[in-house]
Structures are given as C-alpha cells and as structure tokens.
Image (cartoon, rainbow, N blue to C red; front, top):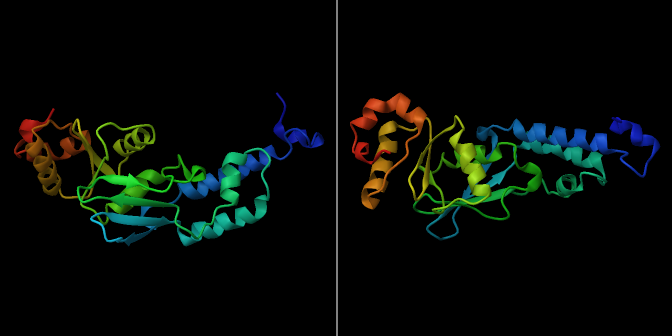
Length: 220
C-alpha cells in the first residue's frame, strides 16, 4: 500500500487526489446536513393544470459551498463531480418538480445535479413539496432506474407513509391525518377495483381504523 499523499513527489501521477477527496467529503457533508425545512421552495404557475416547484439551496449552505468553489481551482482527478460543482451557479435553482392534478410527480431539467446526488435530497424535496400538495403519486406503472432508487428511499424514510398498487405508488407525510390518507386510497382503489399494499408502520399505528374503513376489502 502507498499513501496517496506520498505521490506529491511525482506530480504527474496522483498529486492532489487526497485534497480533492477531502473537498468532495466537505461538499457531501454540507448537502447531507440540509433539512427538508431548510430547502427554499418557490411554487410557480405556468398557466397549466400542473403545479411546479423550483428548489434552491439554503443561503447558509450556498455561502459555505461558494467558499469551496473559490478554493478548489481546476480539479485534475475527480473531474466529473468537482468540475460540475466548480462551474455551478449556486444562486440558480438546482431542480424543478412538477405535480399534475392527480398528484403525479415529474422531475424536470436533468434531475438533481450529479454532484448533489445520493445525499438524501430526493426525500427531503418530496417532503417539502408535500407542504403544498395533499399527496404525491409515482408517474408511471413501472419505475425505471432513478425512479426505483428514489421510491426505495421514500419507502424507507421516516418522513413518509408509502402505499403501492400495481399501477402507482402513493406518498403521504407521516403527520397527515389517517382518515385523510384512507379517503384518498379508498377512492383510488375503489374506482379501479385494484388491491393496495399498505405501509407497515401505518398499519401498526392505525390498524383498527384501517380494518373498519372502506379500504379494508382492497388490502393485500
């Protein structure tokens, strides 16, 4: 084994790699510590039947990340992530989320920037949107790639109750009234005549209410 910092004697090899790795860790730390309540969300209406939400980083995080941008210069090794970060305009929105009248979610642009991914932001963004929407629903019958990863994260997050039919996934904040959740789910499965897979935490907390509701015959 050779410590990467020893390559400073051979500038043509891995000189600077250790510093770039530490820079990436610092960036990851700032992004990971963002709470959903801290995200700046700006709803906008473009005249359609859908709602759109622009997301911006909190001011304090932008200030700290700007300091890192000024320090890193031109990365030589971790170029895919650090180059994108170094050239990123921190003042602009980092993603836009659209929600149609049925609650179906569509993330526009190219999704979350690569340098911000896999740090828990997806769940926090969805929770922030649920401050404005009664519930959210997956866009399509089959989830692909990023969609599968995101809904897997949502399903394991303590921020949400997640329910599935063979058509859609449904997402509610955990502080939403159980009666309101059951009303939505009962309407959805009743008009389609389909079964629903229940969130286990929801069932554990509200079993009696669920089993006495109109949703009971549709539970898998």
